[in-house]
Image 1 (tube, helix red, strand yellow):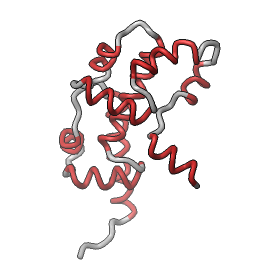
Image 2 (image 1 turned 90 degrees about the vertical axis):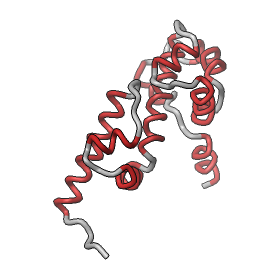
Image 3 (image 1 turned 135 degrees about the vertical axis):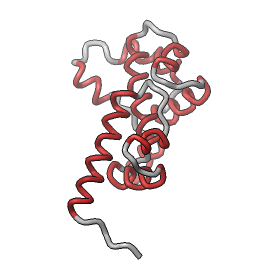
Length: 147
């Protein structure tokens, strides 16, 4: 049995997790995976996944996909790109996986979101639009409604 981490070790771990999160925020459109993220911070993928989920409430992959979908939503609201162009612009390599994940987080397929959002945010300040349009996992929204 190992001893619990010291406060200094815990702070160092949190700093590494923050660097991983910041890297995902910056490089969301790049080909990132948990192995590469962990390697960049000299951690095992399993340790990174466990610690990231404990700190932020979701796995690194889930966080990455949420950021990609968030960026995709903004691009689709602009209306000047096709769903396929947006899919590849945010770093997804499969239109099917992108569409499935988008629908899971947003509640509708990207093509429908693009059509509906063209009118939904008209006239809203960008800070309000960003908050209102932040993706929420449908599963979490349902759980929140039950509590």
